[in-house]
Length: 318
Image 1 (tube, rainbow, N blue to C red):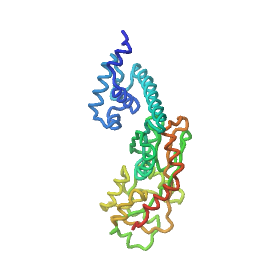
Image 2: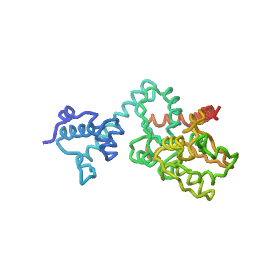
Image 3: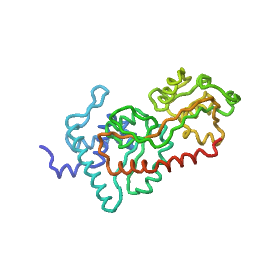
Image 4: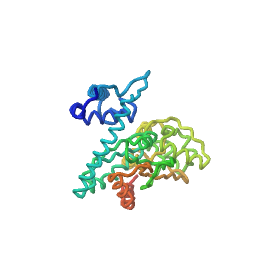
């Protein structure tokens, strides 16, 4: 016999619904745990309690692949409606007090994590009632999170080619060639980009924004690109350069502290200029929530201030 509404209210919790929806969207218990900051056993426990409350399974494994049951699909559709109503209520309550309220879920690619805090500082000062989350992931996962409506906006360093996406560029993303101060290339008054690329280049993996930018530059300038080693993050590359494993081309923002402290040095390359844009990206088809629109409006109206902040960070760089 189906449960009454009162019985469901007594048995279900919003936390269980949140955990279920995260597993449903990410198709993984472990990834849902990473997203929510919970252990995998905690995720499994919440799902088991949910299934016990409903009296039906919501997930099943076929081999090692996780699938959602028919009951789970119905539940996911209902949770979307419930959570959307809660978001609408939160926004309405904030509007009554003259504030933008609610939830804003941002995802930043590896490169953009260095600039995102400068965006958020001023924005949060204007909208303290907002609940903001920021995840740092790879470019492919960031785009997938937008497609699956897991996150509202993405901050990334390469304009997406997908026609379904809208992008708002807000700041130059300059790439620089760096080595250790004691690297033999530092003894050269000038060198070509070809020489630098063949001096033991450490690079991001294929598909990352930084790698795409470098590949595009090399194609435009008819240069071959054969990295000595591929690493999974800009921080990993930076530390590999510091360890003496090779040289690298990285976003300037990601190496500012090391350049200012003299731990890394810029290579003197003739006629090398690689610059892209950081941008805020969202699905065109998604109707912006008040929080999303407030963030987009803030970025659009503070382009000059962001550029001045970036310029100030560049001062006194060695």
